[in-house]
Structure formats: structure tokens, C-alpha cells
Length: 199
Image 1 (tube, helix red, strand yellow):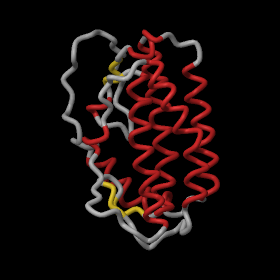
Image 2 (image 1 turned 180 degrees about the horizontal axis):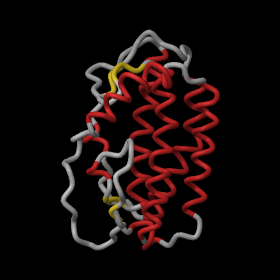
Image 3 (image 1 turned 120 degrees about the vertical axis):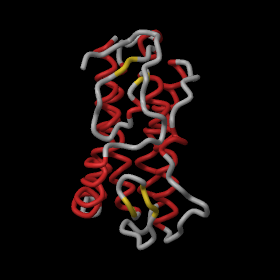
Image 4 (image 1 turned 60 degrees about the vertical axis):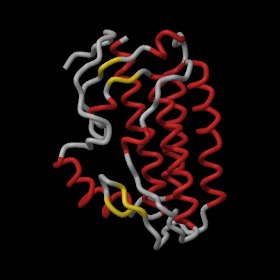
């Protein structure tokens, strides 16, 4: 599939429609128990830091126009169909929205608390696309540079008994959510690279 950067709105699945059933089954029965649940806390943190650096490297030399230009990217594992027509600035905005929520969940679960009325809804974390290029970059950097340190400092139980269900993976404890915090960076790093190809 070729990239498109026209101003026309493509016909995509609605926000929150999820991912293909085979991908969801694989994440539920393979990724969650055998990868996320057995991941290493320190390695997850290193991966988060490394992918933050790679995302920042992709931003170098990009103009405000390029940062805010929406591009339709090919289907990608871990990316909802409705998220395929974003700009780099929108991807950065989304990373901050989701990352901040995951950060809160890790802290609560690590204290063996499940946030009241907490429900993970992928439709509720889409970017509005109203930030300027400068705002999106600044907010991403401000959040990402402190997130790793804050998570390490506030989390007591790295393998909490408390858990919160992710709609694609199933029940996640504090370690699994911390794994996802890093993996989410990797998914959108790939998306950012695909957007740049289409500019």
C-alpha cells in the first residue's frame, strides 16, 4: 500500500474498533503470559529510553509543516485502523496521552490498588490534533524525559497482584503495563517513520 498525504479524509474504521481478531488472540494468549508477564523491569526502562531517543532523532530537521502534515500509513501491527491517518505531531500527542495514563496505572497497581471506575478505552485516547508542532514536540519531550524516573521511583510492587484489563491483552499487572509503556513507544516510532516516508 502506498502512502498518501492528500487532505482528503480516508474511510477508516471508527476509533476503538480494535485490531484484527488473530492479532488480539495472539496478544492475549501468547504475548501477555509469555512476553509481557515475564519481561524485565530494568530492560523495559532501557527500551523506553532508547525508543524515546530514536523518536527524538526522527524529529530533527523536520519543519512545522512536516510535523503537522497528516499521512495515511499502511496497516501496522498494534495500530488501530483509525490511527493510520495522523501527523507526527498527532503521534506525539497520543504518546503523551497514553503514556501519562499508563504511568498512573503503574503507580496505582504497584500499590495494589485498582483505580476506581478505571476502564481502558482505546477510543478515548486519540489525539485531537489541535497542538502546534512546537507544543507537540515540547510536551512529548517534557513527559518522556521524566516518565522513566517517575515510574521507577513511585512503583513499589513490580509484579503486583492487582491488575487492570487491557482490551487487546487481557489482565495486566504493574510489570505488564510497564512493558506496554515501552512497547507503545516502539509502535509509534514505526508509525512516525512511515509518516515521514509519505511526506
